[in-house]
Length: 436
Image (cartoon, rainbow, N blue to C red; front, top):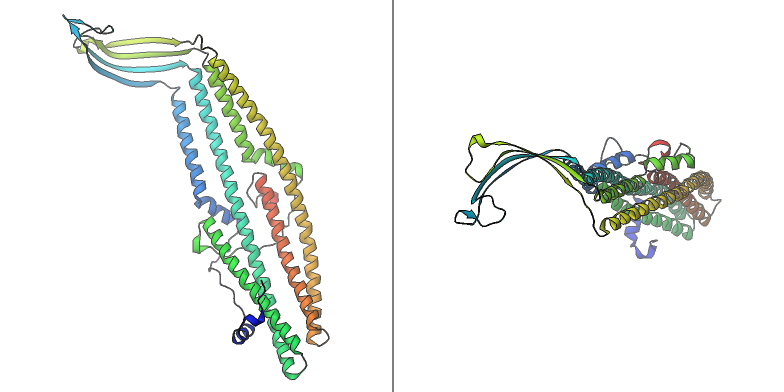
């Protein structure tokens, strides 16, 4: 929004025109903050990453517990039992005596347990799934930090442009004011020069406020707070863009979305094995050392007991068949979903590459336009100072000069951001490999 001259008192206008506008200084820091450093700091401090890590560790513990189900288990069984009796004979049908003493150390060894083995495999697949979800969370955090970083960098460049334009407008105003005092410049030219200064100051102030808010956002995302240093100087990308086939091949191996989908298919396959295992027998071995007596035992009565057991389901009224069919359909659905996701990622990469290529061309054209607009502005400015050009011509040249510079810095940011988006969609962090 432009600021009208009439809405500002003359004393305020005079102070704005006479004094140079200084920027809010950045926090002093020896080394500027690069995008890689900002992402690394965010990955270290953001709570969403900590949540994903804790979930991964919890799933690892559950996987270890599932693995332990396949190992022998040692337990202690001790009890004393009183049973209702009549004339010295126990009334309870399962009782061995009026009082029983039980004390055993038991060792249970699973020999063949297909459902337990399937659950162990499922737990391993879920660990992989949580690991890939952690990678997916890392990419999401990196994407948010990348967007904020480039927005802040664009605002830094925009502030530098408006500041230089303000300095140039102040010089023109002082020259015009001196010419008006001696009668070589008209009042219209003086008002026009004054309007340019106020317009530049308004744009600069608005951008500074927006930059301050974006700086706070980036500070929160990176966890640096008030210690957030200045950003590195943004330069145009130098490396050429890779081929589409190379990008898609990279995405098929590194994209965590596809890895999560593959882990879900493995988990569904393990669930199918679990359902099929309900039809199979379960074999186990048991060993016990101790006593199970109806009288008070003595140390010499301790002994061994060994047993083999088998549990075999015979008929379940179609329950197992339906559960197996449902598990097969679930696995088929996940496989189809993975194929759809792969096609979606391929399509997104095609769009990203096209956007990056267009941004690279736009950056080259914007640089040429900015150079020519600067040349026209400098010639018009010299002509105005020499009295050969009007104030209107100078304003038009100055406006075109500023717009060309803003479009140039916007094109550079877009070129950088499009490459970062291409890297993220292919499963890599920005700045890695050919996407720098």
